[in-house]
Length: 194
Ligand SMILES: [Zn+2]
Image (tube, rainbow, N blue to C red; front, side, top):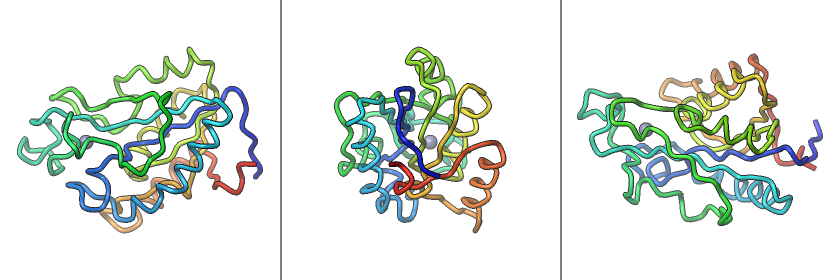
């Protein structure tokens, strides 16, 4: 499928933070390998003067999702630490809109739309098509795309050459993609963006 960018499009880059990169406290295998293609998407959207959103996990040090608090995950993406910063290889323009999630100690948030106000921001900017990439396919990308589709007002394009899965159980990433496709997400790669 050939896709041309139009005035009502936006790019959402999900959680490309140091703690999710190789060597980070909650690394997603191969997550740094998608940085070049994400940068290409960033440049395409920036050249077209289209909005770019970057979501980030941004937890308090005693967040409920951490093992110490009986949660599922090792401590990660603690606000104002190096682990919470975006990978330095990403070429986000200054105009990038940063969306912080999971900031409430008592509540985890996988989706970039969970208590962040991002749906309203998209509406305010008259966005009706959102291109999504980042990590992890089977967690925060999945939750974010699902929320967008549930909101009904958006066409969602999943950039399959710019996502990576955790695959805690083998096949989790593929399962997440299949579910999102069934819900209406359209999978594309860079060569389809003309
Ligand atoms: Zn988290």
